[in-house]
Length: 137
Image: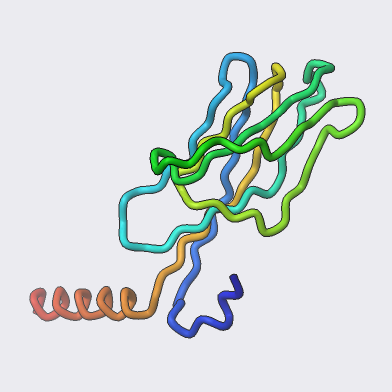
């Protein structure tokens, strides 16, 4: 999504996110707070650790957890032939569940969380701040 073409977006907040999946921690969930803002989550990279077992590692993902969406395998990694995969523009709708379907890991996942703040919300905040200032004086 090209944010420069949307005149109503006044601010974008970007936060990096990451997790490790392994034989003891096979699942990770990216969740957001319940609010009225628009949230976007992009997977950026999945890579195996140098200590990863020499077997196939399959990662599956499920977005909008709980809304009848099924997990889908998105990456198959092996330390000898494909230890890392990068994604470009792979957007998911939070909450997002990552599952190490096969393999022992350790495997690292990085992503980017964008929160879009619209002008009308900014205007409401400014109005509230002005009201608070008037109450003080």
